[in-house]
Image (tube, rainbow, N blue to C red; front, side, top):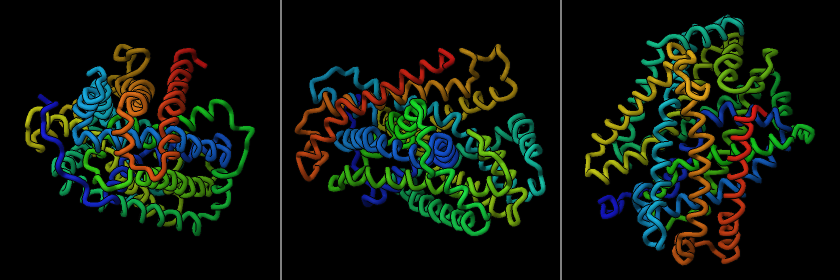
Length: 461
């Protein structure tokens, strides 16, 4: 039985290795295009203040909950939730939270791998100079009518990205995950800082980009902006999918959970803010309006690189950075399911990862086909193709429910003595503050976002 499987004996070499791994999980495509855009559109500095408050009240308490569950159980998320529920005298149905998180990770990686494939393609295309001199309209056509309609190219890059992800995870905790984050995260930080220096010194529009991102405009701080800040604070830390719980199972006992989680949250926020300071000066230097979603990265920014002196190299470096961020996140998406398969079926890690990667790859093919060949109404459910459906189900239903239930489990179900010992906070006041957050404020905030998002989706608001 999974519950009788031996506990995890491997741990991260140091606390900072866990920080790099958890930061890698948190820092992804959303940091680079979504956060800068929603910050600028929703009041700049005013939005950042609300976002930081949401990180403190929602993100950090729930992340601490995931880590303490993983470290105390020393099992994969499915087994951990079931085991701790039994230890606390609660229903074994709590194991369903682990199941939902593992399934969400597989579904997210299915479409995330497709998008990450775009960044790999653009890395090669920009270094090769294939966008040089293109107008914004031409870049838009190359993306919308070129890349997204080319099934062969999409499949190749999706496959390449999944192979890279599988290799890292299959190598195990030390040779794979640990060594990869030790290489990827410093490389990501160095590339990001290099891009920041470029934007500050070469574009001539750094001040405009800074103002767009940080000027306080409370008139734009609507209720929807607050919901957006709360939602992004939750999702940016990779919460609700049990990835952080799986990483927590390898966390050294002596490491401080509170201090470590706060460090991860700070790094994640800094990367998002710096990404905005990189992107917007480049966009404004070319007289373009920033746009949301993939268009900001793959159309607006690429058009800017096509016109800038040295844009061929700078653009290639930028999309290499994006690819590294995507890979550091993807390995955390498959780790929970890989850990469960190896424990539950006593299967070798290579075999488990190969099997799971093939499943994700097949789902990914369905996702990429929904962008072109299967884009018709006959292939849609609730008006969404496979790509959009997976995105909607995970982001709007599975992750909020998972995060909310994890907070409730840590705050109400787990024994107070166990949680107190695991967190080892320096004062009872800090512990009671965290417990009040995770018992009431954090789950309530996630519930509000969950309900309002679904209302807006289905009411057309």
